Length: 389
Image 1 (cartoon, rainbow, N blue to C red):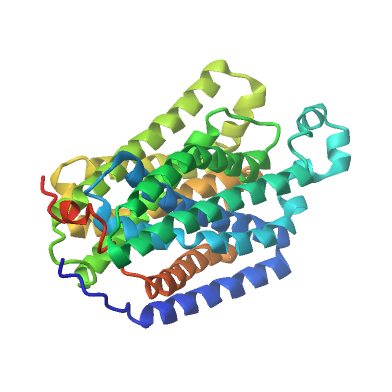
Image 2: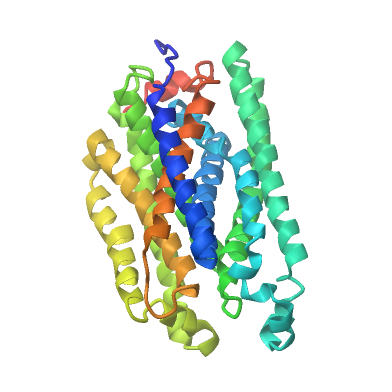
């Protein structure tokens, strides 16, 4: 390898810090003037950050599980995005102050006079909800530190024992990831409308999470390669599988979304259909149609060709496109509970891009300063650099 560690520019921290401060100021104003809406905006931010951070750790574990070589040059970038997991603990705290603003089931007087919520109360209660959240955070943090510590130690001596340890850890983490990401989806998103349920909802959020993590890694990898921060031997062919996985999981997301829709539509049960009807009322129908085209049809047509997946300029556009599509998807999941009848986008929602982008830039720069941007002594690294179609 001819990789030489270079420090990322300080402008990354400065620009990200400015955006983050602006986003926080908007959030503070939102909490002062429209507190309930502010909590929904904050939940939107939080679920998006969970997708990037936990999804990136899942990509790292997936590489170890399947023994992939093509992804080895990119693994450290996913690890850096996963370094936002400890931040999720801090970000979760304000959400608990907004439980009553967000969740209908958290009001005891409402549950008492609602047969459906009474039946669900053994699961949907504040104490158990809090315990599940911290269980998920504990699992994510524990495996993040264990897996990334082994990966970084391998940079010192190249011992294959660290790879073997991470294979074992990834084998344990994989089912726990599925369980915890499902719990997070059900608790923080599906329970916003507690009379509704979907047995496929966890898979739906999982698909969007993987897309977001792949898109973040793809965009950062292209930018770092263009800036000369990665090994010069890393060719365009190495990006093919990133583009392919982004394309494939987007099809998977569409399949799950359609499966959920068609089953609810075909059964035509009032306790299920109202959730979709809310997303077709008023201006929400335009958001729903936008999601179809923006999240599936347009990316499908653009990424379907083989050459598109090795075109770095195209990937540099489509990766943030898919991140924006995931943000729109989460907006579509969360906000019909607040804005019944018509969608709304105001100055409060400007906090989302500012906080998400700003925080990601700051954390990425801080984490990247402490480690190599490539796993320089991983036994699979040379095979990854030599990858050709």
